[in-house]
Image (cartoon, rainbow, N blue to C red; front, side, top):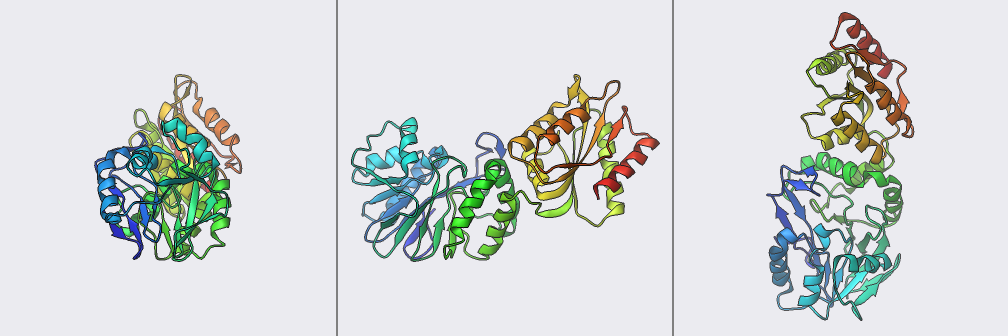
Length: 386
């Protein structure tokens, strides 16, 4: 599709509503969009290509926008294939087009393409500018947001930040605006979230710019209430809770641990007006659970023992939290085991390996099924987490 970002800046990306898994792991029930932009001026700059699934549509859009002209530059913000697949094809189609990237870009480029870039590269450093005429692109390095070669660019005339994967979200570009935070949060914590310090470094650079619009490589172009989006990124990248509330995450084999989780939910609802979310790890999207774990200030995890350890799906959830740098939360633990409960010990070891985690001194061990004494223990645990 082709859309006007402004009179001179055009969107030439594509929706992919049929995609089921982004990066072969994240469920995208509404599909995904791959964004690309063109700046039309005395010189023409194309900002990134798109995924192989939409190659033909991208070239059709590009040709329509060019209207017989040839691009002078292709800016390579990020080499991940959903944005970079068509670099070689575009370079072949437009032999006079130069490639703009940083030193790391061109070190990594041969890993993806057998492409002769002799006399075609423009290697930019932090703060350097490429003049297009009335428009000027200034480049800022964003290493590990979320690959080492990532850079963003700022068009100073119109105040447009081309933010690479920053401020991206799951879904097609026409998703309802009210849904931005939910799918942007799931996208951030599961894809970018490990690199909070690097995001903070980029936000400090962005704070010095007069940004009027943000053009990410996924999701809608952001033109209003930019402070809202930037504030969320600041909270997320500092690993601060976005919502003062409680997330209950549970895995259950035969339903007994589920019964305890639902009872705990009921107890907490009676004790507090704080928002409470609950997720069945065995049946609901794991990455939604990761999102909620980071969103809320407190979490209770309930899991059964399995093969002398912890039920695998609960272990997978905890592993995801650890590699995504879960921290700065208060947590509580409930385990279940019929003869040799072991899940609680493993959960505790996970949390003890994370920074800033306060583990409740009240834990609960269920022996097979929920009994009156279990309920009393859950009452005490609820008090300890509030």
